[in-house]
Length: 314
Image (cartoon, rainbow, N blue to C red; front, side, top):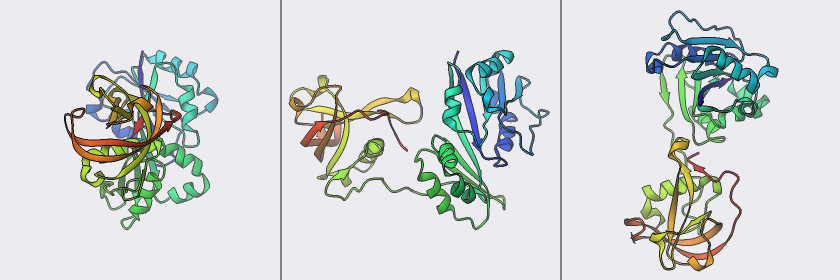
């Protein structure tokens, strides 16, 4: 049985419990009347959950503040006790996320991770417990900075998150009641105007998206990246496709996305990884069924598959 885990992370008094309370009082979170929700709190702060306004009667609270009990048997026993179909977990800010991942029972998976921070304290935490800050930002879907002063340096907070992940949305709550999502644009992690546009493994999805959105900027440019070769009925003759599986938002939408190279098929094998240098021409292409980026190979050599072959936009 698959058990989705909604994970709330952050240091003590960072606002996790308040957001958890709001979630449990939100009727839209309980559209499925069959849901039985287990809430696990891994630390106890000054603020406590108030069950009286909860939007469902099928909510069950448990405290698990001893890391020695964070193991598959204990977690599965708690789920079975209440026949829970999903879990909301308020995680201890001093515990590492990989420790939780290793403790999840079979079938449990983190479907959403939200990180909360006291903006007035984040510099202190980052200076003294950088590894814990990075650990919590690393796979977050949403990073919230609350208690922001009206004149808070938003750019500084933005850079703090983007130095770890490009994936997370960022939200700011100010002490004057104002709140807003981050709308600062991030520069590309590669130089489009370099003699050779060098794209690291982690940035292939960003190249693929920017090529689609800004094709004229790449016309006539030379690019270098690594990818997996694909040959099919569309690539008869001397052409092949090279790319990566790309995940847009979740595991279910992973699909292979590649660029067409019009020469050099005899130098590569399907389903093998290569590092390629090629010149880009924006022109009509039957593989795309429209105008698109067509590569002309100038150099290719075997490459190791990256540790995580799935490319993402962060």
